[in-house]
Each structure stands twice: as structure tokens, then as C-alpha cells.
Length: 83
Image (cartoon, rainbow, N blue to C red; front, side, top):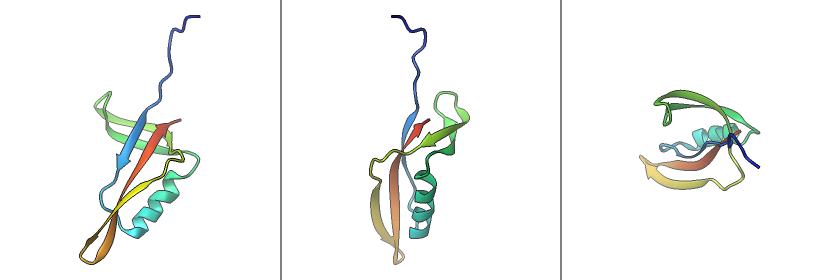
């Protein structure tokens, strides 16, 4: 059997800047939908903006929690996988 083309999917590991609890909650509501549209700027393959339909799998999200001016800020890391 010979394949002329092999499909590939983009997979990215994303780490946010420090976020407040409210921002983390908003982020979770967005990324744990069935799918979402993400705009990657710059997209590494073309060095320009690229929009893709993505999803985040059930891999646990990791957090780094630290205090700044008395407020808990969280850095969130999560996967983004192209549909």
C-alpha cells in the first residue's frame, strides 16, 4: 500500500502569563468545550497569523500559583490539538 499524503495535526503546549482566579475560570470555560477556534500569531510554519479549530484533551492542566501584591496569580499550562 502506498500513501501519497500523510495527514498531520498541530499540537501545542501553551503556558499563560500569570492570571487571576477569574481569568483562569474564563480560560477553562473556553478550552474545555468540544472545540474552539484559536488564532496563532505568528504561526511557526508561515511566520504569519493562522486560525485553526482546536481542542484540549483530558490531560490535566497544571498550575503554578504565586502571590503578587497579596493576590494569588496562576500560570496555566494546557495542550491545544488541531481537529
